[in-house]
Image (cartoon, rainbow, N blue to C red; front, side, top):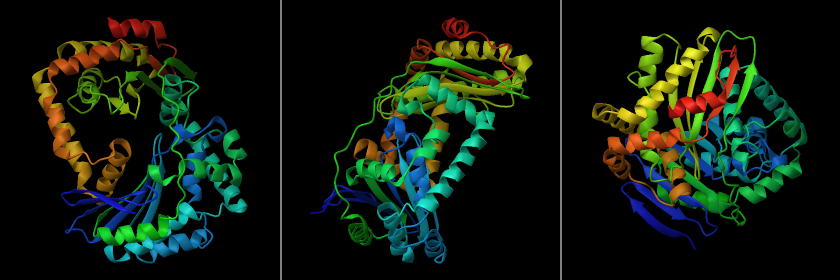
Length: 427
């Protein structure tokens, strides 16, 4: 029996009998429909021998099913003017399509087909492994990508959440159809899947199609991923490059933690825009870097704060000294004017993401998977507005007590020791 349990403004949500959630938001002013299936599984759900498997499965979804060749998948979508895509992250995998409203059934047919009836043909699998190995090699040749992989691995060493999403050449080469199907049976269970649609959509029509294409999916026990345990550490890769890329990190917070918004605001004030402290001091006053930014990556049970920059080898020591001083100072004297500006920028970013159907379905799917409900924008804005400067300063102070993570690549001989950096964070 299907259960229709939420109606909020223009959003309808229905849960199918097998646990798959269907959510739609009708946007009368839009002639197209954007649809997607979000699975609450990503790279952190992989076992050691499955490292990189989520990403490979995402690629293989477009390589043929029992009904369609890879060419026919593309043709069926593009013949109606649509496009189709997929993405893998640490905690989610998504498959999305955009078509005219009148072609919603076509998009859902294709999405259902690639998710449930993928063939995993041996020749296609071999070819796609080659593509991903090239993708892996491209990262190895791109210092500003490679360094963030190293950063995550040092923050969460030996853990699924810290492993690069692409996998390693050894794990990629070892994957076979049996491994793929075992992972899908375990992780792609309807209880952790959301089908979301926005634009020119009719809820009843989407639910009917979802029942046809996904209603027979078997239910499996939901397996929780290994908890993320921040440890910290360092990786230094001395290479002959024109520029040193450096990422400095500290333990952050889950998006479910009450202190999340204060921590996010601290990161934004420190290095989130052209008026941020790091940008003003490092880029504008001293010319030490083309760009520098601070960020806060929240996950379901942990988080990671960081500062990333690129600079000349001769400026590495000064860049670190200035970065540490700015960070310490921000934890002491963030002003009300900075608070007002950061809150306004955060609200604009939130609301801008909702201006497209794609942004809306991503919000719907992620919130349903994370919270089991739609979190109204007004509720988020109220939480942001309620944060005080004292709370943000305290969030900064708490960050500075954590053990640092350092990842650096390039001409980094002048980079201080990790112990020296840890002492510099605390003043």
